[in-house]
Image (cartoon, rainbow over all chains, first blue to last red; front, side):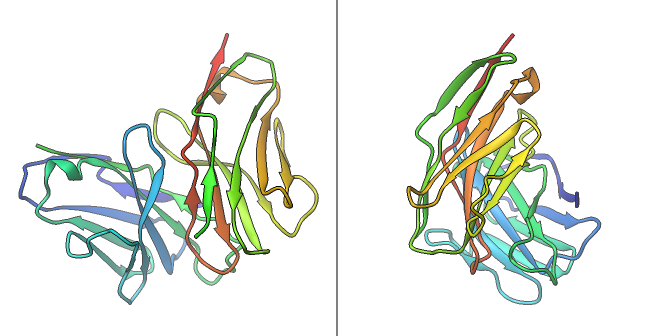
Length: 118
Length: 114
């Protein structure tokens, strides 16, 4: 199957700083990428849908100024957590669906990034 | 909005036995896709099986099969001949045929006893 790579796998940052998480589709072009957040022992909650060349669509309750998403190319989307606070500590997962295909094509998941804000 | 419900937070099965994980969903749409994902301790999401709503035949992938009841909005996963490597969190997911996002259930933690 197709490969989606997230970087870094884990990161620790100080409160008040910003951290960027990258999501790359390694062997396909992704016009659409998705960002999820997963709290411990909980499910994946969709944060936003990232479309190449346009603004991301955020789910209700997700602060767009807090979680900046940039999908600058067909293989890269980034999530920047700005002015991070301990409550932002979580597991963040991206997924990507190959572009040019129908919605029946499955999306592929990255391995996730564990963010700890101290 | 579509919702996905997994009513079993935890399940346990003896190695080589069969276990069924339950999932129900709520939607007013007629075209959609249903998925079961496995999330082992590594946290990597792995697609186990998918079902297109327009197909009446239940999907099967080796030891994994589903019981898709469209009218009842039920989508259970059966794991046959359970193996130790099957131990993981299992998430049921729904995706509309018209929208590109995916909604997940709360998950079921499966333990496989040797």
